[in-house]
Length: 149
Image 1: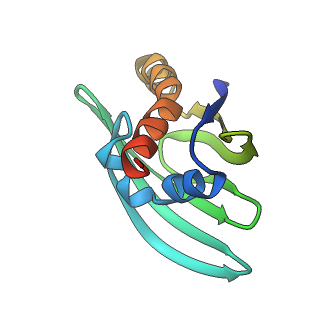
Image 2 (image 1 turned 60 degrees about the vertical axis):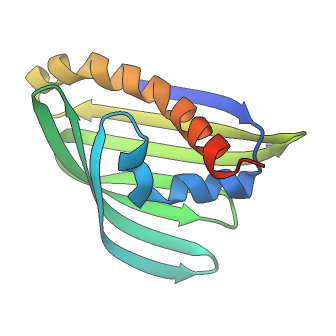
């Protein structure tokens, strides 16, 4: 059961970072392994909460996989939660939180997952681990470009 957690302090506000991570359609532009992301459904739950169902296609060399998740964008609480719906995983859980600190915010990224197939786990496990380590860095670099002052 691979699990990865990282907290990174960035010079942007929690609201800016929330908006950047919530903009899932842009992921293929900058996120490691992400080749395509399509939002299948959007539902406004009221009180600043929106739920998306999205399918992401990832690839590395000759391997391509797609999976579907339910993404809850909780803007008032500055949290994003991701639940697995369908694809090559037994399960996948992902959370983002954004907390104000002097001069910016702490961005916490957490992911816990397991592939259904042992063979896919062997093939993609180390690639995913390296990619997840780069995710927060990729978002910070994107924020620096988007919110440059």
